[in-house]
Amino acid sequence: MGPWPRRIRRRPPKPQIVGSSPTGPGLRVIGLWAGKAPVGLRLMHEYVIARGVIDSLLKAVSGSGRRIRDFRVVVGELSMLNMELLNEALTRLLEASELRGAGFRMEVEPASVGCGSCGFSMSFREAVSGLSEEEKEMIHFIPDLLASYTSCKRCGSLDLRIVSGRGVSVRDVSILEQ
Ligand SMILES: [Zn+2]
Image (cartoon, rainbow, N blue to C red):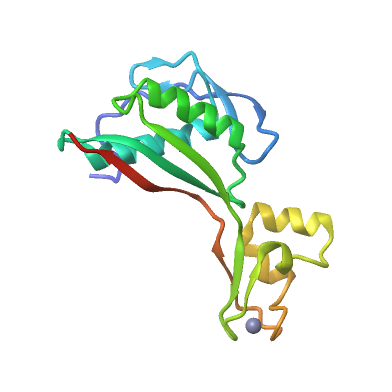
């Protein structure tokens, strides 16, 4: 028995890439496979994130009979997401889900950097100040490269880490008591 499953499942068709998002690594794809039929919707990175947000909320109330009144979506400054597209994706997917009627607010969480040696905390902007635009862009794209380009502004240590401003989180979920 090799590592491969005996029954090869039919692969979904490859999404057709029509151009990269102007705001980051998200790809605009057409006809992304969803279950048995391709969806005729233009799907983007923002849609995938919105889907994840809604699925996590559905999971939180599933089977409880409770409904969500509103929630807050916090988007990290370094997440490379287009807020307008994410807002649109959330609105559309929300209305098409069991969470229909729930409201939400979106906000950007500023990125901050902490020093593991002296405990100094600085904003991302401060941490990358003095670097070229190209270097800043590179770090924005791959934040883990931070210490390859800069060091702690207080003690000079390279032990820098991004403390906030990455990813997307759902907070302050308020439940409609029935
Ligand atoms: Zn330091």
